[in-house]
Length: 246
Image 1 (cartoon, helix red, strand yellow):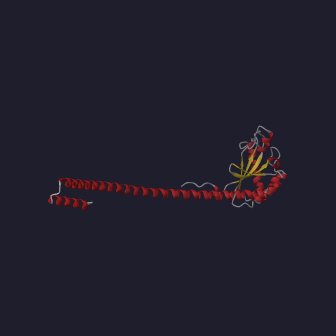
Image 2 (spheres, rainbow, N blue to C red):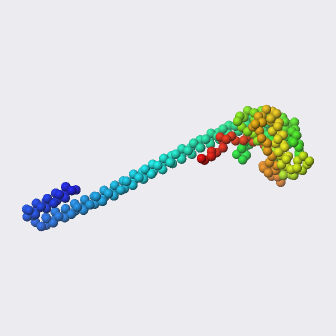
Image 3 (cartoon, one colour):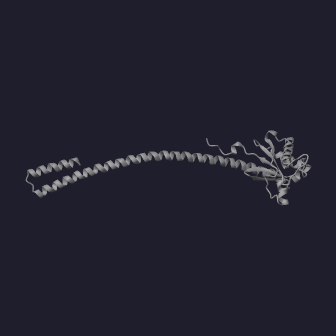
């Protein structure tokens, strides 16, 4: 562009020296002014383009950092999902093993295996285990618990919580002042028997829930009968629990 201006100026000088008509002289002047304007516009456009380029480079750098953070977060989420899937598959395997090994007892109506409140458990009716208002195990109950103990012993690295439950009919005797005492005493009796059958007591616990964790309607006889039960809960392992955020 600078060369074009110099050439235009030289041309003007030569034209003037040679007696070029004014019309041609003015045309050359006009061309030179246009060259000056084009040069100014080019400089402005160049500056604008340079600014845009710098902005895009900065944005690209920011996008790169954001993309890296997003990829990191996605990778972390995938790791959590894989861990959760592994834990879920492990729980499903234990549950299937329980169903398989206890199938004969389930079919005979001695117990049920189910998942409630996210926990695997074996549920046994008080009818097979105890006489009304009593804590002494019946012979049929001992036989069923003996079979159950043989299965529980083979489940490694697992704690078992024996939970006693009653209906909402109040009890008040010299031995049991309320259903709290009755439900807890029954759970302790089952724990002691399982220990005698070889289940490691380090993995056993007992609790009583009285009438406050019903699975049936206490306003009906069938519901009351369902609520009077013993549950052996397979407590979750630490690796099955959700990870805590640091």
